[in-house]
Length: 368
Image 1 (cartoon, rainbow, N blue to C red):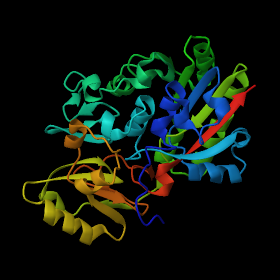
Image 2: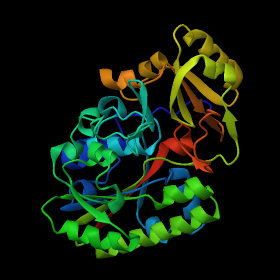
Image 3: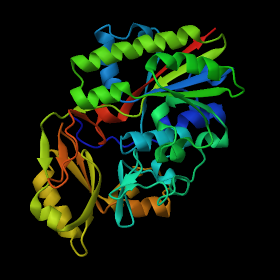
């Protein structure tokens, strides 16, 4: 069990440093990205949503990933919180969350809560109300027009506009088409092709990391094998992920009524929950959260978190305003929910800063 939160190191082997190492300064990747990858003529960067390093190593021991096992294996950190919207934006922009501002799954924006993946509020789709390009102002891929292979259904979403705008979007309708889309993109002028697959994360959320997850990770390995086989010579392949996953099952804790009565709203997600206290309630709320949940969770103030650099050493005024005053992070395999808004019942979850959630694989190969 992790006794203290694993705080991402944004100066070293971190998800947010991959794109700058590939497109800007190779020295950023020195020591953790192989030289042959950094100097490759073409690079395919594939993100497998929900593939934590711990689960990958277990799958390797079970002989579920024969293709990945043949490749160079490393371990890097993702960002805080360990949630898809934040991590993918850090990957594509090359910036820590404090700079790009997508600082969680559900984000406080004025008097509303934005679901950053769906780009919705309680009023519905919020693209016209909350402009994605203004909300997240950092140009993806350092301003280069990069080919992107991602699900076709996401093409026109607000979150796609926030973290993939001005890219060449190649939407796939069927997983079997991913390899062909990547092959077509490699024929374009760009040195880098980015691809995203979310099937493993979906399986983990619905079924946890048991037999169904094993079956999906075996398929992912097969898919990666197909991608590698079609790569032209001189091309490097990088496989990584946005977060690991913890099996929570039915271990869901409903937030105490007394706490909710002193809270204007909550944001974040079930394993990294932000409390926005009603005026004058911050100190008592912090103390009561400590008393109730410190045996299974970490309780931190916003000031503590910013001082420790959880979102990077630079944080924009907009990002700071979007944070709550007190964070409750699950340390044990549990989830915290507001009983008035339980949300979907998920078996596998993520968001907190345990080793299982923070460390993700960095798997590389070079086709010579």
